[in-house]
Image (cartoon, rainbow, N blue to C red; front, side, top):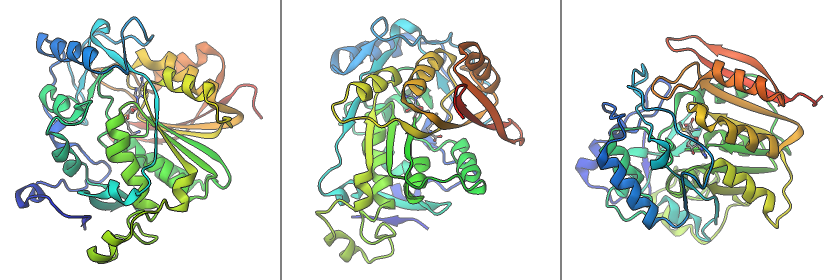
Length: 367
Ligand SMILES: C[S@@+](CC[C@H](N)C(=O)[O-])C[C@H]1O[C@@H](n2cnc3c(N)ncnc32)[C@H](O)[C@@H]1O
């Protein structure tokens, strides 16, 4: 049952709202056939991005490389566009401030519930973002390229990927304790994993996504909705709209435990390590569907090794293989083994069609 804040969506738009599938929420317009040839049209777009976005680092300035474009055979209908290395840009990291009046981030949003967590309906956000007014313009790019991922431009955070729900299930089943822990939701997208930690009384929760649009339009609103920023403890969604709209001008206490970041992983870890605010490393790093591209493994590995507490744990959820980009559980584990820094342990396998894994990682030197 969707709830809406400051409703201003046209009737036909409302009718297009996506329904929640068994395990995944899809960004409807990001479905389609893959154009994996790094076409001339896309090259123009990327060149434009180089000029417009001062905060982007282009290939050659940042290290991750891109895989060769490969035709997509993905059984879960995810579509990937892997740009040649020289066409990809990588985003400088930045921290996003929490607006003073957090209820504003829920304006024009439709709130839904899954597994006891509130989230903004992505199709509605998408509709509000197609006017080209947002700097990254990732919705239009995702639609025009028929891709759920465009290397170095849009890394998939507008959609809730199914392994997020696997990891939520696993963390709940095993009663992983968040109390007083410092937690990072790495490659957070909707941020449901971090929100789970927040609700589990984590001391601090940081959210990182590649795209600033995702943080501003999806992650932050989701956290607000789960922190009572829209009204009462339930995010205000049980209150009549008149009351909801009057409850403004406060930052819910829970929000003060959160920080939000966008940017490429190497850039993010540099930002965190160079920050004036003393960084206490993370006790837990939660990350779902972030190992699809082997070209990012080095940045991912270095980031988590710099930011994880010496006795901390990483819980990573992933499909066994990502057709079209080439990453997956086994190739990632091999990479980790070769680096010889972390030990890995498969803690759960969901063997339905394309298998999905939950992996626990810890420093080899840890207890
Ligand atoms: C497929 S999405 C998964 C989103 C979310 N974790 C989920 O399961 O719904 C992958 C996420 O990883 C992040 N990501 C991927 N590659 C990245 C990179 N090189 N640097 C920073 N973030 C990256 C993006 O922010 C993106 O949201």
